[in-house]
Image 1 (cartoon, one colour):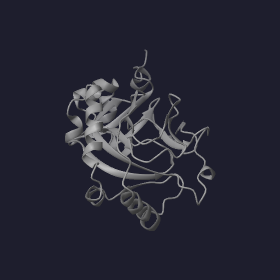
Image 2 (image 1 turned 60 degrees about the vertical axis):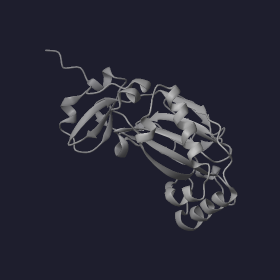
Image 3 (image 1 turned 90 degrees about the horizontal axis):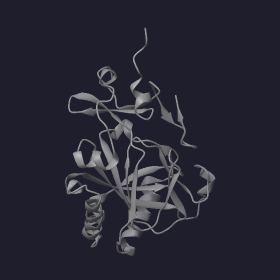
Image 4 (image 1 turned 30 degrees about the vertical axis):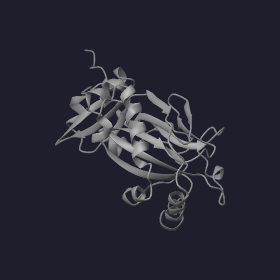
Length: 244
């Protein structure tokens, strides 16, 4: 008697299990990356100095760390904040995402590079839209599964599946290495990130995401996670490869 097919093999090997209300659902993990560059003004010197103090005194970022900055305080010192949001909103509308950005949660983040990781264990019900605000620091946003590298400059904007492994690495580097971020040099990147709901029909269509591909397993789980070949997996922080 033949065995039932493994849903994760039928859907690109990867399945993300995410919370939808009081229940768990399953979905595919998209390897599509939507990227571009929007025209945003240079940041005010007063604002960047404020962020530098926060990063140094409060966050204490080490190579690979990603932490939040206070957005409400930044907006009070950032006259072009609305312009930046409008630029991203206009860009996402060209992708067929309509007004989804306006109703999505937004946060301000800082990183000093970023180790390889996926975010579906916390944000499996979302797709990220990131607007990078800092000038070119010689860093790339790298997606090892597809090999795509996005140079990070002011105005770089990307939309990607939270289940897709990614990192911020030195340009020209083959992976994440802390020695690429020596003390005394400014490698900090500040960016806005929106959580676009993956169940929004326009978001799902833009990234080609399929739902309820393994409902039987979803019923057995209580935490968001990603499975590959029928087993839970994590990401190697140095290379971005999947591992048990």
